[in-house]
Amino acid sequence: MREGIPMQRQMPQPFPWNNAYSQQAKPEAPGPSSAEWQAWTQRLSQSELKLQQMTDQLTRMQKQLDELSSKPPLHVEYHFDQLKVNRLEGTLNVGMSPQGMPGIESFEAPDPSCFKINAPDQAKEPPIRELQAEMTAEMDTKSPAMLFEMERQFDVSLDADERQKVLADVKRQLNERVHYYARTIDYPADGSDEERRNWQESIKEKTRRDIKGAFSAYLSKRKQTRNTERG
Image (cartoon, one colour):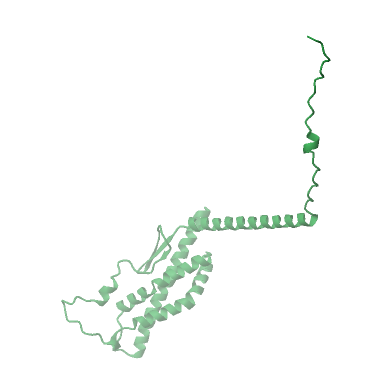
């Protein structure tokens, strides 16, 4: 074999990283200005303030619900000349109806097998509806002040919602009380005008007594409950 001039081994060319991939660096985007930062910070602070206000409001509402649920429901039952207060599960009920009182039907519907029922003489019928309307109007105008004054006397403070519930519950039973007294006290149909006025005033006075008695019993029990809770 003839010796020749050894061929020089061609070396691979370096990979042209710098030429192929070198690019001019992009300029950095400008950051927010001081005014923009201040506006963002202000909006963030306002959002945090609103969130805190909503949280505080929810906390107050939950506290009110807890207080309402912790109040024991009361039932004030009027039993002729006695007032009895019981604890019951359920809604507020300030009762005025006497226990065991016959139903309205027993006052107005006698047994037809005993005698023939004639159409009543309207002039001799007691003016029950008129009395009921007068007592309802009187309660609307005078009872709120009466209850508020009795709260002061009993040293018991009801919130507006509870006070309204007491008034509404007594008012709901008002017509029944007027009807009861009108049917149990003889109406002087053939008497003088003065006698009929006295009869009406007697019905009103007894009903007023029941209203005040129901308020008194309820406030007395509320005071007793409050003192027990305080220990």
